[in-house]
Image (cartoon, rainbow, N blue to C red; front, side, top):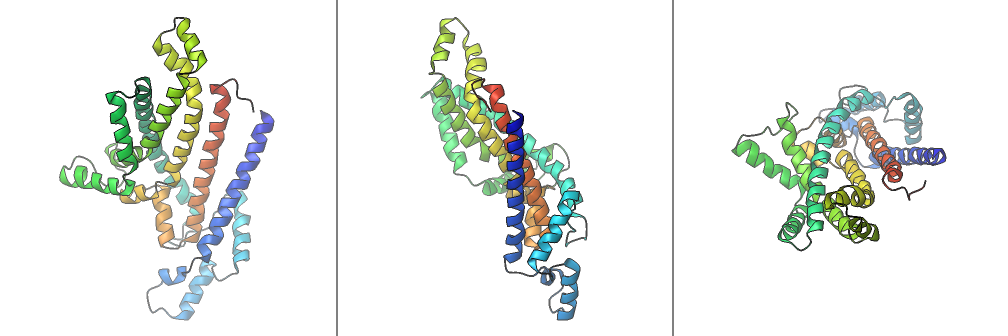
Length: 305
């Protein structure tokens, strides 16, 4: 177990380092000058040169990269081009908001998906099963950004039930979390349904029925442990998607998280902020996958590290 943890930790460090390195060079190799975006049109070249020197973008790429690496061990992610604030502090301010939205969305997604998937698996080809598959098909083919805009038009502008932007109260979570959940549910419902259909046909399930165990015990204890192993992986990947792939959702609802922060940084070519948000997402995503791997042995004693 200890050897496995050490190996996975080293792998995570390599992955995070690779993601940060690729991001560092990618944002700088894309055409565009941050100094031109920060200064008004028609600014003299001498002023632009001073702005580049202040930002550090006048130095060679390898020198900029080495400076960035030197600050990483101490948590120094540089200074934002916009506002001249430490990137680490701004990322730490936005992470809790993204976590809060992600947790609400994942709890809602997991509970509904497992409930719908299990009931559909226990009654295959029933009316409920067919309705659930129709819902999966519709939800999977609906773009999340379009759905978010429709929710805002309906529930915020027309009905005035829920706020459309910012994070003011618990009501502010409803629309962005619902939009995320609907985009995440189709894949999880399909996986739950298929996994439970296969598990319910296993020999140990028939043995449990022969011993006189109730159906709730069979499904909730015996089948759940085995069927949940591939589902835990999927939930972990979706949790990573909520953190890294919810950029558009946070932008639509003006959510003060790192997704919206990353999108604004890309538009403004704020290199340090882009690097900081990507680093935070990479760390959280790899940690989630690591915890998912550790959960395998707890769910199934046959799994050995």
